[in-house]
Amino acid sequence: MSNTELPKTVDPYRLAEQKTELEGFIPLHALARFLECTLPQEASSGDAVCHVKLKFDQDGERRRLVEGELGAEVVLECQRCMQPMSATLTSQFRLGFVTSDKQAQQLPKDLEPYLAEDFSANLWTLIEDELILVVPPFPKHEREECPASAALEELEPDSSAPATEEPRDNPFSALAGLKTKKH
Image (tube, rainbow, N blue to C red; front, side, top):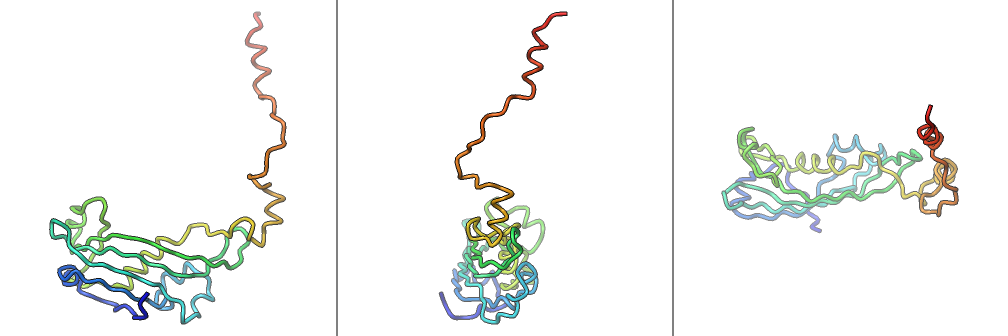
């Protein structure tokens, strides 16, 4: 990965016409909305970054688009034990640049619209949106790594263990006998 900080704003139309590729990073401390999804101590880490690769291009109908991938190491709160946990967020995306809702509706299904007003796009906001989309809704440690695994084992026995429980009778089996009796 490149050690270059990505520019905040670009002209995506010009970059698409020139088939430009950008590679670099964005400091996570600059993405305030995304930091709300992580633990507070992540906000104070000035060296945490999101690595990004972007390829600007045009499709056969001259629509300007960007294909990208990103990766970031973050700290989230485990929803089992409520303790910090490290997570790697990754995403691959494909966006079509539009200047109106009408253009957005005309994009093919495989392209997500990205509104680029005045032929300008804020790359940091674009990447922040993608990061927010890949944050798991309920982050959890792996079961065996979770500090709450002992308490969890008492409440939910490991589902990978073989079941030793005998099959229970069907609660409606008594009704079957009533059905065959004639009055």
